Amino acid sequence: MFTSLSTRRAVRAILFDTFGTLVDWRSGIVAAIDEFTVSAGLHLDPERIADKWRARYQPSMEPIRTGERDYVTLDVLHDENLRAVLNDSGVHPERFDAELLERLSRAWRRLRPWPDVAGGVDQLRRSYPVGPLSNANTALLIDLSRFAKLSWDVVLGSDVFRSYKPDPKVYRRAATFLGLDPGEVMLVAAHNDDLTGARRAGLATGFVLRANEYGAGQVSDLTATGDWDVIARSVPDLAQWLVR
Amino acid sequence: MFTSLSTRRAVRAILFDTFGTLVDWRSGIVAAIDEFTVSAGLHLDPERIADKWRARYQPSMEPIRTGERDYVTLDVLHDENLRAVLNDSGVHPERFDAELLERLSRAWRRLRPWPDVAGGVDQLRRSYPVGPLSNANTALLIDLSRFAKLSWDVVLGSDVFRSYKPDPKVYRRAATFLGLDPGEVMLVAAHNDDLTGARRAGLATGFVLRANEYGAGQVSDLTATGDWDVIARSVPDLAQWLVR
Image 1 (tube, rainbow over the protein chains, first blue to last red):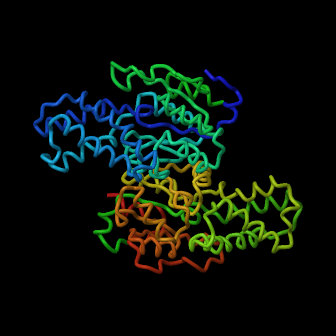
Image 2 (tube, rainbow over the protein chains, first blue to last red; image 1 turned 90 degrees about the vertical axis):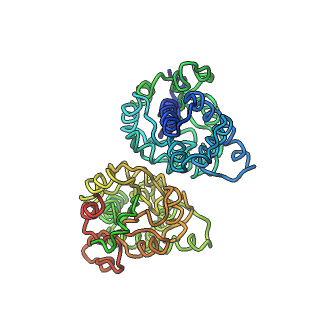
Image 3 (tube, rainbow over the protein chains, first blue to last red; image 1 turned 120 degrees about the vertical axis):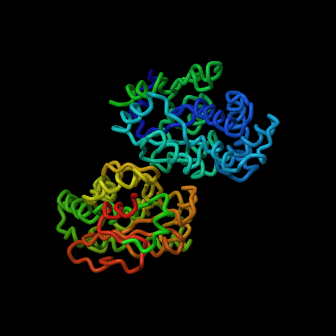
C-alpha cells in the first residue's frame, strides 16, 4: 500500500538493506556453524550459536556509530563477535585451525537470497537504479552479491561512510553519492529501526515483511510499526507499486 | 601478451578506467555538441569544441589532486570546463536556457561503449569481480553504466576517494575496498599515464588499445609505453589472457 502518491512520483533510486531483507542469513549461518562443529569435533547447537552471534551484531556497531571506536569493517566485527560467542560457550577459538575459523567467520559471504529477490530486483532495475546500502563492507557485499547472483547499479558498503546505519549521515551521504535529494531515494528494509533511521534522514521508506528471518520463533518486525511509504509482502509486491 | 605468469595468478579482481577505455566519449560528445549548437542556433565546430572541452579535463583535476582545491565532482568540473570553452569561443553560456546547457554538460552520461566491451566484461565477470575505477563521480557512473547496459560487482567513483587518478591513494584505497592487496587488483586502461599511476601504487596493469579515442588524428596512447602485465587489442583479447 502506498500512503503517498507524491512520494511514489518522487522516488528515483532504490537502495536495499541486505542481511534479512535480501538474503536469509540465519539458514546460511546455521549451516556454516553446523559444518564448523562437525569439522572441529564439537557439540554445539548451531541455531543457538547463530542467534548469539547475530545478537552481538547491533551492540558491536554502536561504539563506532557514537565515535567512541574508529571504524572497523563488518568482517572484523563478525570475527570478534564469533570469538566472543565461542568463548562464552566454553570453546576457545585459539584451539582451532585459523583457516577453519576464518571460513566460518566469512560465512556471511555465502548466504542465499530469499526466493522472491532476484525477480523483484530485476523488475525494479528496469525503471530505477538499484543497489545495496548495507552495514556490510564493500568486499563482503561483492562476494555476497556474486554468490547470490545479484547485479547492481551501485554498491554502498559501510566502509564508504566509515559508519553504520542507522547513523543518519550514512543515509544522507548515500543520497549525495546518487546525486539525488534524500526524498528521491527509497530505502527498502525488513527492519523498522532501519526505516526509522532512513525517514529521519529524509529518505522514502519501503517495508518488506520477512517473517522467518529469525526462524520460527521470530517476535520482531512481524508488522510495519511505522506508516512507511510502501508496505509489501515481497520485493515483487514492492515492485508492483513502484514500477509504472 | 603476459609478461609475468605470477602476476596472472595473483589477480583476483579487475577494475576499468571508463572514458576512452570502456566508452567512446568523443563521438557521443561531438553528437551532443552538434545537437546543442542546432538548438541554440550557433555555428560552432562540434569536433573542435569536444577536443577543447576534453583538453581541460586533466588540468581541472590537478588542483584537487594536489589539495589546493577541495574535492568537487566531475559533473562540476565538466560544467565549469564547458562554460570556459564556450566563453573562449565567444559564446556566452549565460545567454542560453540553463536546461539546454545542463543537458550538454551531462552528455557524459550518454556515451556508447566500444563494441567489444559488453562481451569482454561479461567474460571476465564469470571469473573475477569487475567494476569501474573512474574519475567520474558515482552518480555519473550509475547513469553511464545504465545507458551503456553494463553491469558491475562494484562501482568506485572519484567521490568515494575525494580525489582523482593518478593520485596514488585512489588506487590503493580501491584495493582496500575490495579487501585485496594492491597486487591482486588489475587496472585496465587505454591510457599509459593511468597505468603508470596504478603500477606505482602496486596494482597489476592491463593496457587496451583504443586507437580512435581521440578521432582520426590521435597521436597519444597508440602503443603501450610500459611493460604492462597484459597488453591487449580489446577487452575480449584481455579476457583471453585472464580467464583460465
